[in-house]
Image 1: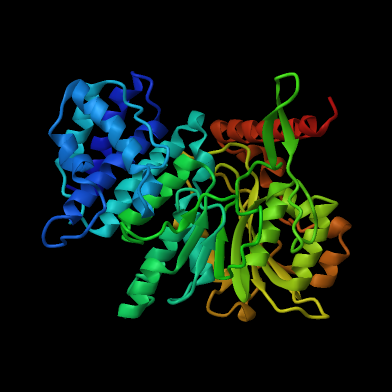
Image 2 (image 1 turned 90 degrees about the vertical axis):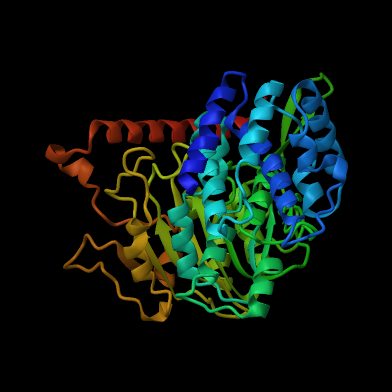
Length: 493
């Protein structure tokens, strides 16, 4: 059975559970527990005979041998007990709960997973199944899961620009469901790029990846995603920490950082005040290694990423527009980034490619450098893939082919041999460079630079389709609403 058939089979069952009020996310979580137990069971048998650390009374067989209320009671107990175990086992079952209240449907789900042999499926097939489910979950806009899901074609393009090498480390301090790790893994195991020896395979499996994810359910999905792709093992420590990566510098340094930090602009914590009401307090991280103290989450992530890079480390980071133009701490961070790293490339992304609406984002690429009196950045190259580009999730989703021209212009083999496509003769060229001095002379050292003429404003005879226009309007309204919410959050009561 191919991956798509299994995804649609597993997914169609979710629709019957929706009637019981089980959300996509909750369903995916239960699948994670059950899939893990089934695969552990398969690994415990010949030819693998692996020690799984799962007690016999809580193994897969213990679930398939029970029905009805007895199954439900046993499943609740099993989730509690396995959450106390060490290694990935305990991490996947931490604080786990049964969300499927109908024992007959729980039994049907167990039966459905039991029908497949998961371990003998190719890694890519298993991975495709789980990734397919994660994407379906992200499409469910109401659940908010989309904020953890970066479009896979964009991730792949970022990986191909950075060209990670074997025996080097890759970090993602806000790793969501692990998309950047898996795209890097696919790249490193692709025979067109590398023929890995035994040591390199071992390093890739156990030492390459390191991440943080503070949302427990999302972290669980990420751990499972890695496990299904044969990264890590049942009894190894989890590669994804539940700690907030912004709180402190733990001293680890990495060769590459690929990440899409959360879009929410302010860092805050909720607490109950003296009147018993919920109140939010802005969080400012006071870290010695930061250039500016701010409650702007993205600026903090950019500073943190620079800290955790090795002296010659490389980063590709998705950031919203405000990081490119905001004054105050934003200007400080941009200036320091230009001086202390080689901030060589910015890709302007179109709207309509993320599941969260109204997101205007960019990818910034920078290479870390040792301390120096002179600025490391000499010029910044911009690729405008936003102006006159229209994507929608359903009718015209972003594909990898859409970003091939950018990758060619980026020239991953040697970024010092780039050629502009923009010129006075070709003012519609999307690839253009600006000198460090010119950027420094701009108001607030703004990197929010665009030069292409927006044709939708000029050519009234060739307006985009009504649904594209409507989505643009929705994006702009939602973006404005988001800005108003942020203003209100900082106004005194």
